Length: 260
Image 1 (cartoon, rainbow, N blue to C red):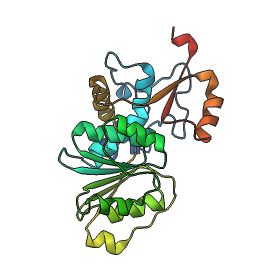
Image 2 (cartoon, one colour; image 1 turned 180 degrees about the horizontal axis):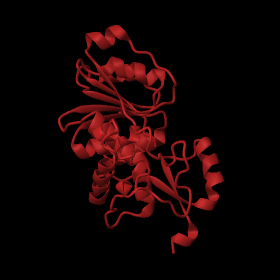
Image 3 (cartoon, rainbow, N blue to C red; image 1 turned 60 degrees about the vertical axis):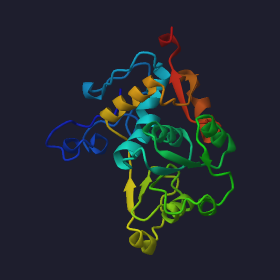
Image 4 (tube, rainbow, N blue to C red; image 1 turned 45 degrees about the horizontal axis):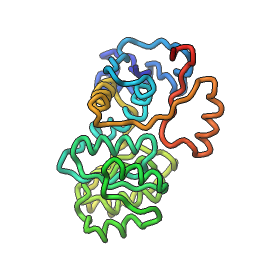
């Protein structure tokens, strides 16, 4: 299920354009309104998606956010194609799934992160183009002969360093997709953007169809979300771990009496 189905009215300028996540009148569970940290929740039937056999509730739960958002950014906004080269900034809960979606499409993927363990995890998933921790990204691109060949950058971090690097390394006529929001403001280099005719796109959430397609990828084994499991009653501890940077990707909290 997805808790942001929009109002669904054809008179709604957002829902009529298949942008329910931007609907101003629909219920947005978990985004400023009460969400799903409860044994049961009620949603509009338009927000229900069939979970394929073999996918656990924990994985399905993560798919409605960390997978859905990454899938929408890669497929709907970046419109990544098999022959393209994509540079991904950040391999957290969203970025790691975005990396897998790009690989499932057949694109070449280059990744960067400040945590060595995340880069090691990317290697285990078959990614060969990895920027070493601490390495200057623009220098890495030059040394690898990648100048002019990066079609799209997808920034799951969103700080001045990654935003600036994206403008520098993406090819002329390329796309920059912004997903991460760690910084409230970033700077566009106007001369660079205009001379390279860059397209700077922003991505937010996704639609029910994105969720269905993402679940299909998971069912096929092409996408393996990283999810830690916990109990709903331990929510305060998990929240502290998240604030302390101890959570690698996503955590699914389940009610003990519903798992038996």
